Image (cartoon, rainbow, N blue to C red; front, side, top):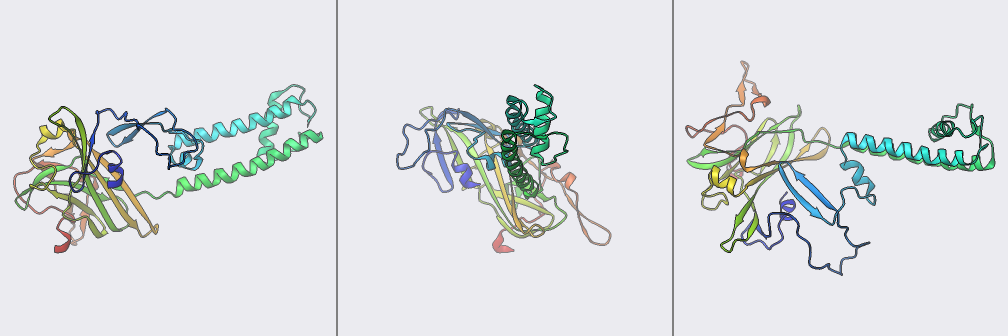
Length: 346
């Protein structure tokens, strides 16, 4: 997560965990030159891509969202509607190409009507799927050659489609539930930024790690605008098991990048809070992760989370994920629910 946010900055870090970007607000930065020690297959294109990370958006120039040279990443990155639409378009395109080859040479397909493109198209569909109903079949050497190429194409298409579909279905998801708003409340006598996270899976997650960063937009004395990425030190950044609830806590003291901030200053600085969670799912035997972004308007000063864990009659803890982000006024210091204390004190 820190590496991702650091890529949004183009200056050397001036403070631990932070970096500067002395640029205009619009992300239209273009390099003055290209390092010739890095080999490019071709010069970067002039395409503009808008990237969205939660509520935070930025643009990149010289990149393409749909790069046909990287079909695997393209297929996995597409949404399900886009993926299905792309498969349908590809399927129809392949059949149309082979149908044209059959249609251009009359007599190559037996029992196909003269000049009927529909017959050539449906014969292509049958051939690509290796169905072979028997009504139409290749009648010439040319027809047999085209059919041979189409059968090979059909086998490759089926294999690729099966693999990509399996990858999309098997991609693990963290299924974490984030509170709708971070809060700044008193904890142990100090103002503390808190973000509450719940485990939305029925199973327990293990070896969970968290990172909290803030992106601030500030103006220098000479009028230049720059973005500053700062890592927020957490009271506990790692927990061995994550069964129910975890409240990330960052003390806003004199060492904090948010020291002296209130709601108005956070909005003026366009403060963006980024949360990155990584955990191991023992059921899937793999690592899952998730990222959440909070704009400045979502920060709630002087508020705290309500109780989300209750106790049943038999003493069993009960977590209500529907109230994980419920808020109440911060009227007094109290122990926050979930894993909160420093790791060395655990």
